[in-house]
Structure formats: C-alpha cells, structure tokens
Length: 467
Image 1 (cartoon, rainbow, N blue to C red):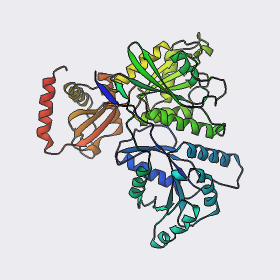
Image 2 (cartoon, rainbow, N blue to C red):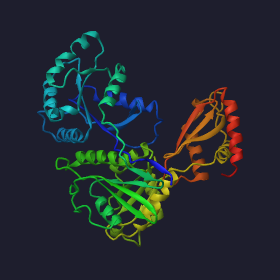
Image 3 (cartoon, rainbow, N blue to C red):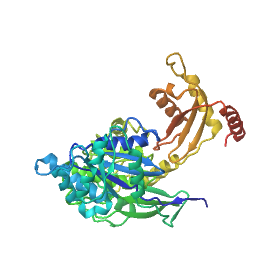
Image 4 (cartoon, helix red, strand yellow):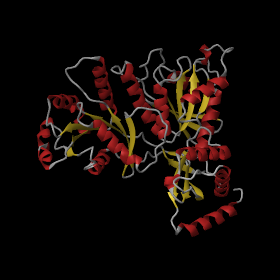
C-alpha cells in the first residue's frame, strides 16, 4: 500500500514582544512580507493582523504580534494586552524581544526583560530602528537586559531582515522524523473553534468515550490529545485543541489563546472542522480561525453545533447555509454541516464529509481535461484587455496536491485581474469539484524555450485520454 509522509509536527510559534512603539508591528509586517513574496496569499480572508505565517530557508513558522506591554497602567486594555503577551510567551517556541535602538534602554524594557527571564533560553533580543552607524554603536547597552548582544535590524527599511530570519530558523526546534508513517487515506482532522462551543463534547461523541472532562465553562480541558479512530475502513486522527489557561479567562485574551491553540492544531491537519454555536451565530473569532485554515491550505468544514436547541419547525437549513457562506465569503467552497454533539444528531455525516473533503484536497486531475476546461472558459468569457493587451493562456498544469495548485503559463501575469482569477477558479470547481478544499492558482510567464515543452506536455496529455 502506498505510504504518505510521516506525521507532521505543529508549526513553531514565534512571538514578538516588547514595550509599545519599538516597531513590533513593522517587524511583523516585514517578516510576514518575506513569505508573501514567495507564496501567493489568499485574498479576502477576514482576520486581524496578529497572526501570520512566515517561510525562510524551507522552514515555516507562525508569527504572533502581542501588542505593546505597558507597566504601571491598570486599565482593561493594558491588562488584556499583558495577558496576551503571557499567553504568547508560554506557547511560543521562540520569543523575539524587540527594543528601540534609538531611545536606548527604557524602564519598560527592564520590566519586559523581567517577565521574559524565566524563558531566557527561548529569547532572541532584537534591536530595531538601527538606521545609522551612531545608533548601531549604542546597541551594546541592551546587554544589560541579560539576553546577550542584540541582533540589529531596521524594520522600516528592511536592513538585516535576512540575518534575523536566519537567526530565527537556526533557533527553531529541529524537525525530527517521528518514526510513524501514515497509510494512504489516513486523515488528520483538527476540531477547532471558540471556547465553549462544544468542541470536547463533539470529540467525545465522535470517539464514543469520555476521554476529556466536559463542563459548561471553558477551561476544563488541559492537554491536547490525538485520538485515532477507524470508521468504515478509513483511519482518522482527531487533533483536539487544549483548553484555556486560568489567566486567559476574559475577552480578547481568551480569543487570543484559542487562536494560538488553533494554529498548532490546524498546522498538523488535513481538514479543519470549525465548531460554531448555532445559537450565537458566526462571530469574528470563528472567521479568524477559519481564515487560518484557508491560509494554511487545509480542507474546511463548518459545523453548526447545538441544533437541538433550535426550533426545528422554523429552521430552514438551506437558508441558514446561504447566510453562513455569506459570512465566510473568503471560503465559499467550505462544507457546511448542522448537528448536535449532545444528542449526536447529524454526527454520522461528519466522517463521510471529512473524508470527502480530504480526498478532494488530494485530487489530481487529467492534464488533457484541465486544459480543455480552461480553453472553454477563455472562449466562453474572454478576459478584458488592459492597456491594449489581453491575457493569453498557453497551457495549464497541476503542480501539486493538498492543496491542489494549478500553474497557468500566460503571456503576462500582470494582466490577470482578481475577478478573472476567481472566474477561472469557479470554472475548475465546476468541472472537477474540490468540495471543501482550497485550490491555488499561479500565473507564470511562458518563456520562449517553454514552447517545445508545452507541445510535449499537450501531446502527453492527449495520450492520457480520459485518464
């Protein structure tokens, strides 16, 4: 039987911490921007900029911008920011302690250093705003914070950002083979969602035992646990997110913690099932978590839980599905389900739906059929000219699966409009499905030497026939 890659490890989390106004957000944007230049981003995802995936030297990691840590201030916003920072410090594999090289060591820097000292082995000191030789000469005063000589950068100008990324990757935990291999068809399912939407109850109902302690208040589940389940000849691994810490028991801090837990679970999954409370409806945090799955190229299932508490006579599922997908406009392909973890109604469909989404995400389509569908799409609706030039597509190939990646070789990638890209995606979905699975479209210029390759590819595709 065909074997797949070893079980994946969670994506490392790198937290950016420091006092206000040291340039943490600029550094975040600079580092995430390195990834955006390499991997095309998914447009339309509605989520805040606290989280972003970066990629460097073949390693991916999740950046978390914690907001400025202020001391001596007791208002609610400051308290929540401090709570977020503590959560990030606990969960992160690496902490970027950012200081301002232009102002020198400030009392707030010393306070932050005191907060980080218990995890000093995970701290990388970064002196930002180093934009002149004079400023560079002053960075050694930050050695008094106890984390060695800082790495100097300028987030605004991008100076030394490559060196910083090298240092980050060097400090990330090494990736060691787990020794476990997965059978073809093995599906990793992450069950994620806001606190108190019934995730643990859902896991218990699916697994059929009380593996986790379930209570009505968030914070009862302590550790993340993977559970293997065999259903109708398919092996599933349920990746359950751990519960809420005591210091993350309010407002934004609670959401921040649940999002970080979702990051770890989603990064290891094939399909993310986002549990949503049907009574409260779709919230910003639900979109944020689903957006993480979209960004990571995972299959997406939206499970509306607690339907046992809804008046069945007045509840129109078709209408509700349309409303839900409108809320998740950045993922119109998502599979929507309704059910109750308490009564187990509708849960039997979860396995079938998750398996379908996972298989669609791994689907590879015939090159001949693919090019025929794209040719028909161009003929049916030719792209509008831009400045006297029209987009031409010479050929298309599927370059990858999980998620499916389609590379279009065109005359000029700059001529592709986002609306036409969406049109082409819809054409591919109409022809090949990909239910619940994201697909990626990449547009590359066809250089002259590609002509022979293209003719060879098309000839080979023709020989495929209907394969």
